[in-house]
Image (cartoon, rainbow, N blue to C red; front, side, top):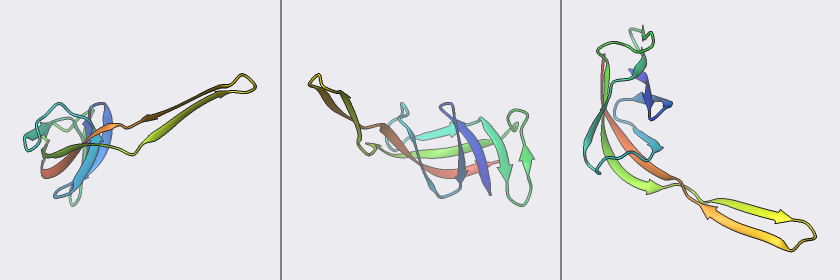
Length: 102
């Protein structure tokens, strides 16, 4: 069984007992979170929401918080001696999908 769920404005495909990396959520590590914006449930039976499936929930546990890979931002203006190099790392949250309730 899998589901399409909306988390923080983005849509993700989730399955039970799998991990999902999303943008940083305001939750403690080890706490449980429920998402009720389930757009689609697939598997042996298919349920499509209009816009969401009523009564459906996805229960997750926050595994850890971390940062993503570094993205290099480089700016240059030719013949002017202007060069700027910056790095940036996204803040991420790793979720463990516990249960999909239809």
